Length: 405
Ligand SMILES: Cc1cc2nc3c(=O)[nH]c(=O)nc-3n(C[C@H](O)[C@H](O)[C@H](O)COP(=O)(O)OP(=O)(O)OC[C@H]3O[C@@H](n4cnc5c(N)ncnc54)[C@H](O)[C@@H]3O)c2cc1C
Image (cartoon, rainbow, N blue to C red; front, side, top):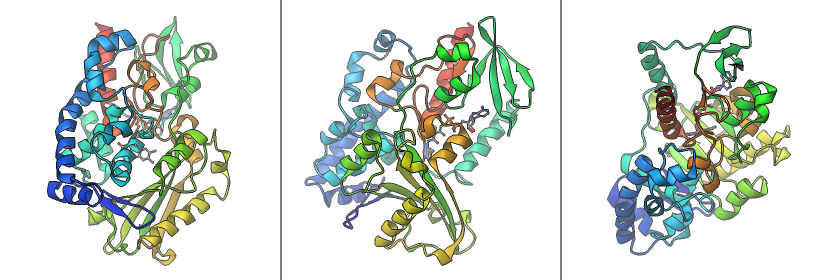
């Protein structure tokens, strides 16, 4: 994964250890000792966070502390910020900004997220970055295949209008065309805060866990090119000059940053089969504030103005995308993300992962008021991202089974 700054600085993080040391050594003195100490420290911390801290499914702080243990929480770095955790090993602002930018995987800022999440870049370096055959959609198809083999019946293009509640507990679901399905257990995978509001009757809607603070939204662009940009790289993060300011604009001020940060993926750089011969595909993701705090993201010219800034910045690094090479282009605005996937407040990564919204303080996976109603996915425990929502599935299954006993 490559990081590029406006002044031309670059840093590539890789699982190739000598290359990683060399890269970090361009910015931080004594890089070998720093990298080795960081990896040695992060390895047990990664296991601790993944196996013990993240997947502990407790709805009370007391129960959570009993299960995880205060010493584990302290060892995981939860009591300090992610940035502070990284500063224990690195001094260079470039290195800290690059490693800290992994906070965006959770839609957060390294200055706000608990230090336990500093294991994210370690995980990527230790276990590598993998592209499923057929792209990320290949993963969807594989899961569908496995589910069907297990006898699961999937109804696609079927919108649920409501969850039926009888005698105070779930009785089934109803689709928009009026078809009803009776069942004892309903698991909502739609974004929890919005789904609860949309799918339950007014009395139950008012009795809900506190609406969470949400992560920012995104503006995304999808381009199919007749050619391939020079040296595209699969993953590139275009860093701002001043990371802290950009994160503050996004997370706190509700302002579109002057100094944009964005991510560009060129999956055809790894798997040429993802584009016709000689061509390439580009995905561009620009984090932007939520429309609820920054109405400017809803303006008609918003998508075009962000696109122009992104293209200009890419061109300044030699990644030119000439209009004549674009065979196909599509984009999705925050509002489109919200409407197409029923995302609460158009938030791309669900409820934020700040200290007061993780573990037992996060939206629970069992509804506190309606027996038989459960949640899974980004806005419930443990949080956002594909690996994390997979854990969420496992946690919700365990919760349902233990309730059934
Ligand atoms: C642009 C973007 C890029 C991302 N990149 C990455 C990445 O590189 N790596 C990573 O790990 N994570 C990434 N994430 C985050 C990741 O995609 C999410 O955390 C994850 O998809 C959330 O999974 P989920 O199951 O909670 O919800 P979703 O994937 O949103 O699934 C919920 C589904 O429920 C459906 N639904 C909603 N309401 C109803 C209804 N009433 N009836 C029927 N169906 C309904 C929705 O249409 C949707 O299909 C990205 C997110 C975005 C927006």
